[in-house]
Image (cartoon, rainbow, N blue to C red; front, top):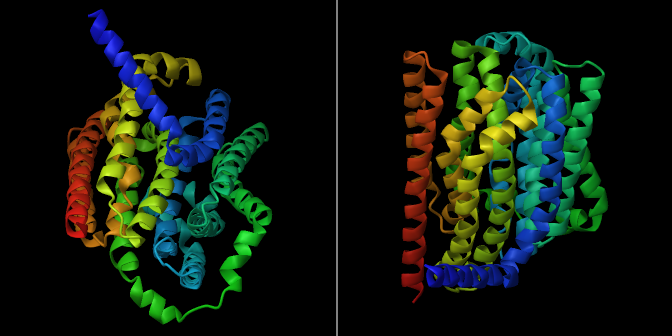
Length: 436
């Protein structure tokens, strides 16, 4: 037994040593260094926020960002994902400008729907939504513009700038939430904070890295029609796939609210915030680094499968033990963090833990479909995913059980993500085989 423990310890030390020496891990570290501080700040603030705001306030906040997130995905046509692919800098800059044009068009469309905000709020049986609906215009602009600039920074390996933005956004978000809570803006404070924080963080980062920002506009643009046609797979397949993915993630807010009310949605909103917010920030950091490295390898005609498998195994060696520890200490942690009356949040996170683990392991690889032109296949998978999640929620509504709906959605999410992982492996294997 002692020999076995010794060998396991040696293997873990060797693995951690390889992770530390990996250049990809160092780039991820640049992104995560600010994220860790930002997440710790957010965790420290939540015990105060849950004592300032009611679950219904978090429910309205979750509904707003669900609607805004869906529109923001449409607003760029997913062209920002194509910025990393061109060999030539002027072509990449033209793609970025094209995405900005699409964003401008969508902002006009959203602004034209403001007069109908009361009717839209009635669809969700959430009258409070009407008073904050107009904020969707600046919210969509902030999220969409950052998606484009984020891709440009990734192409230029300016990971420090991305970290700075994430830190500023989290810091500003925490400060404004506390400020608006202190001012008793309890119903609209969370929403207004979600609008101001990304906007101010974006403007700060553009000013800080203005030389990199200006390179988008200084190069001679190519034909927008030619570039739009060349990368048409992104609005045709990648955008609908991302839209379905976001729609699936936000379905509980959009579908379950009329049946279970803002109170239940508030508990779920807090559960998804604690479970998915840190995971999404970490996986986004890993995704950006791996996307840039794999795109470069493909442009240079190099092998991908062996290198990427090694990075994924390093990730799994860290994630799986952490999730096991989280399952043990989660109820105690949530009770200490949020205070009395939030126990249901801990239970919901436990139900979602297998799903969260799979997101941690599979989401960083989502770029594979775009690098290798398989957007159509994964659009089909996302369509099936959406249908299954609707069935899961329908079963929960039929049984009048919010918890049942969440458990079934978690099971569906776990199965679909494992299916995607298998598809990624097959795509990489076929690419390497053809290359040889």
